[in-house]
Length: 444
Image 1 (tube, rainbow, N blue to C red):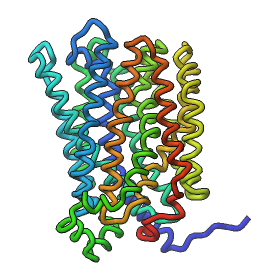
Image 2 (cartoon, one colour; image 1 turned 135 degrees about the vertical axis):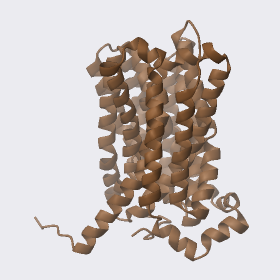
Image 3 (cartoon, one colour; image 1 turned 90 degrees about the horizontal axis):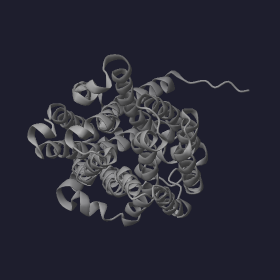
Image 4 (cartoon, one colour; image 1 turned 45 degrees about the vertical axis):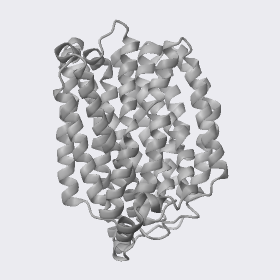
């Protein structure tokens, strides 16, 4: 077997890219911790904002506000895309983290329904809108940044760490939940006031992340080259970002099509799964948290594996794997999961779902980034993606709970499989962006 050796320059280059990716992903991790803390602790704070004798109705109200955070994501995608494509990826990423901090602080200090009536859910909605704007901008800027600093040969592998840190943020929220559940607080204390702790912690982490990013995050070479060439200024002053983006209708449609099934599947097996396992499967709060935590650890491990595979065989086969398996396996997995009473079976079934869902999550960011030129790349990734996530991703928990309240919970399983099938059709007919990328060697 031939020995693989690296020159000193290659080692330094790899180290530089790893540092850039770590710092560039830091904001992504913190923002997703803040955003997912809402779902992780909804079982405890829903009663404080939505009084009702029916816990399903309380969760439906909380899920509706969760979806509301996604409605404004297209606005965030446009605003922060404009910021990133005109003034740089670094500024866009840093500002979005600061906005997430503000949303968490509002939730931390919000009075309950018994204290101020309908103004309580109104304040919660305001916080979710601010966080939705922040997250709408974070995705596009983060996807673009990681793709541009990765280099062409390992772009799939390095950019997959966007979802490693995204899932890492969710894991961090669950760790906080486990510690509060098992070590520090009783169930009643969590219901009364303990649910505020994770949001306060998230605000502190966001401030720390913003300081680190401002100090250590470096602008990408691709953006600097475009800025020196006058492309970013020309796009910002004359044509306008949206008008420039309109020159790529095929790419915009592709982003919408390849995102729909993947985002619906992702939010089902992350955000909604905790509620599903608790209320449908019937596991206890603590066991539910363990199951979701373990499945997310498994999911995070899969991301770089699938990303590396896409660097070898291309993006398209990995996406088709997700589309085919998601179409065929979603209904059986959710059906069996709804009837099991075993935590181990529940864990294995969710992991089975991740075996195909990771085919989308690991590479979706780099596929979108490879579709657009540098001067509109962030907006091209963020805006159509945010619109699609608002329609199919953020609404997934709400749609699932609506089916449940109507007594036809299995209807959601077929809905999800159908949306994945629509994306499969896009995967089959799209080009492989690894072999025909607009990025070329701009990050090499």
